[in-house]
Image (cartoon, rainbow, N blue to C red; front, side, top):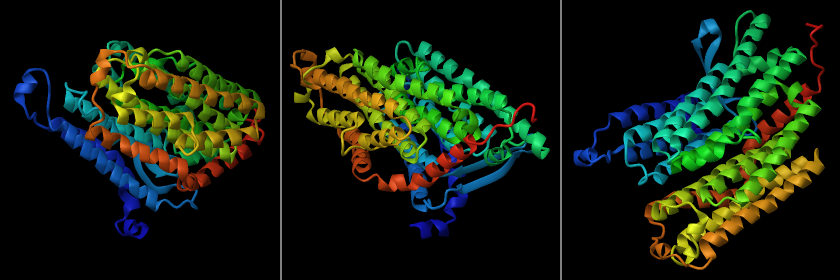
Amino acid sequence: MASFLDSIGYNLWVLPALLAIPLVGAVIVLLLPVRDPAATAAGVETPAARQVALWLFVLEFVVSIGLWWSFNPADTGWQAPIDIGWIPTWGVRFTLGVDGIALMMVLLTTFIMPLSVLGSWTSIRTKVRSYYALLLILTTGMLGVFLARDLFLFYVMWDVMLVPMYFIIGIWGGERRVYASMKFFIYTFLPSLLMLVAIIYLGLHAKTVTGTPDFSYDHLLAVGSLTERATLWLFGAFFLAFAVKVPIFPFHTWLPDAHVEAPTAGSVILAGIMLKMGTFGFLRFALPLFPGAAMNPTIRMIILILALIGIIYGALVAMVQPDFKKLVAYSSVSHLGFVMLGIFALTLQSVQGALMVMINHGISTGALFLLVGIIYERRHSRQIDSYGGIARVVPMFAAILTFVSLSSIGLPGTNGFVGEFLVLIGSFRTYPALTIIATTGVIFAAVYLLWALQRILFNPLDKAENEHLTDLNRRELALLVPLVVVIIWLGVYPAPVLRRMEGSAQLLVNRVERAGSLPQVSEAGR
């Protein structure tokens, strides 16, 4: 396969193609004619947008999967690199590249997006073309964040992805969609402005060294020589932007509203991909660019304690939620706390574990949101007490919901176990006391999910509305089976994934530890 990809020059065009296909697809979807004018007159669009969007996302996934085969785990540098001049007077370049960390995020994105289309196949009935066009534009923004090697380009992509999600929640969301979309946008956009100021500072700082502004990630890593005060302020700006996106406690309050009010695909994308951009930002930018601040004992301990609070708090709040979708939303706060613990424990095992939790959370929690959406379409309720005993009526739904919930808990043999186990093993080497406390989060996860399963699936079937529910159809099985397969694969044989990310994870740990141990340049020295 690798030789075939080389023969077609795959690495020369794959990354620009991944950004271009969704943008071109969005234009195509918007230009599609409406197939049924009578239905449109009645306020229900039935264009071919669904089918076209689905096949565009399938094409995107097929194009991206070649990265898996062409990727060389022994090469810790950028692979499939692209470097083109963009705004020369500002020193901004259109530079893309993929390493072991970005590779997994790209494949996660291209895997989740076609499933999101299938998940909203019947629930989106108005402004259908606009909806799928926004999903396509959103995909370009998300992939751009993972692939950008220029900080200015990264910021552009970071903000591009906010706008489509704002409209997806605000137009196709629930009753409080306007409030939720505004809260999502304000919470995530305002901190990104501080990050923009920090990016501009870095680019102009490079000018004092090289004579021209430079926003290249690699050049900024090499320039260094920031004062201790500047490093702390810049790290603070990046930290705030990424912490809100993760979200870290106490910056998480936008998340439950956005998840609950978003349509099913919006919730899947938020949980499966967009939350990972915050943790990816720490791995790609905050730690390598500002290791002195990131490794400052006080700052590091504060972040680890916030991660620990998020693990426990998210699980405890999830435990008392009457709304199943909100329960899953708060579980994300807990799972992402494990990611932050792994990142700032900064061992090879903990960083690899954090990356695995990022992938596994996207798969398992995305599947949970899809299952919530499936049962909501039948029953029009997300309240846990609206159900009870439905395992007798919808056995396939009950079996998959149980299996996915066990993977989210971290049952051995499923994907969730591998990531959390690596985080805890790696973190114990540097912060044993915090790790022991964090382990209780696994117990709490079992409590809130198993208790919810009991009330939804196995309590007495005492509500007449539940007696005539229909089980999963072929489209829904086609949607869920790939997720189940990946859950089993990553739980039983995660070695190929770990091997591809190991070199980049080790390079990150070495770089941050080495640079973080060097004395900072003082103000007087400058």
